[in-house]
Amino acid sequence: MIFHVLTLFPEMIREAASHSILGRAAKAGLIEVNAVNIRDFAVNKHGQVDDAPYGGGAGMVMMAQPIYDAYQHILQNTSDQTPPVIYLSPQGRVLTQPIAQELSQQKELILICGHYEGLDERIIEEIVTDEISIGNYVLTGGEPAALVLIDAVSRLVQGVLGKEASHQDESFSTENLLEYPHYTRPPIFRGREVPEILLSGHHGKIAEWRQEQSIKRTQAKRPDLNQ
Ligand code: 4H7
Image: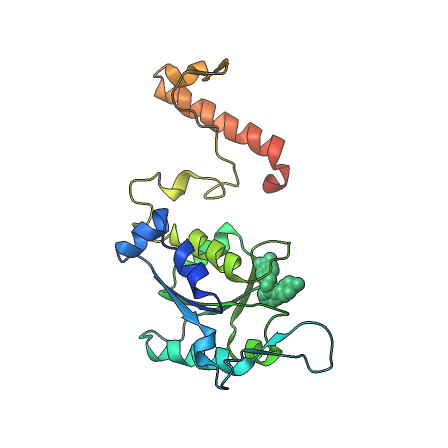
């Protein structure tokens, strides 16, 4: 799966996507993160990509033209029909596991990261197919949001999790349940013992206990998930 990311800070995207499971998936050719610098498509000699808002007011607006040209540049090298174009913004529908699941079926995605006051509305009308928010809070730029989306979607791509536990039995996957608590050595840490059942070797009982813990936890910590 290829993620094309239109951004003013391509190193933020490249760096964050180069570690751990995503880095390994990229090396294995399972995903590709193609960060495209919008500034490379500026036309005036100052490399300008933002301008003052019509109508006045504070802040700057990202100009439509550099983003449009960067988008056309990406389309030239994409075999597929036009991929979905996702604008990460507080105005989007909030990202959920089912949305990540759907996006993971695509061959390519184009992500746009906004800065300053956001994009000229006309570039949104012209090329954006999907506006997504990663939650109800404000960021200084869209890059962290794009990285969250890339992470959530990539781990659903076949082969990316490799030997790590499959994503099938985790929080939010099948049922809306939180994960059960995990323990590793030592058996006692600062007087706190590992639940005895986990040391018993009774796999059936352990599975039952974990299921029960998942349900109790969800009720206690996130009762909203099961409504
Ligand atoms: C696009 C439009 C995403 C991107 C506006 C991005 C939160 C999210 C941004 C803005 C983001 C999310 C403009 C919103 C400046 C904040 C003060 C970048 N914030 N900005 N405003 N929840 N910020 O997914």
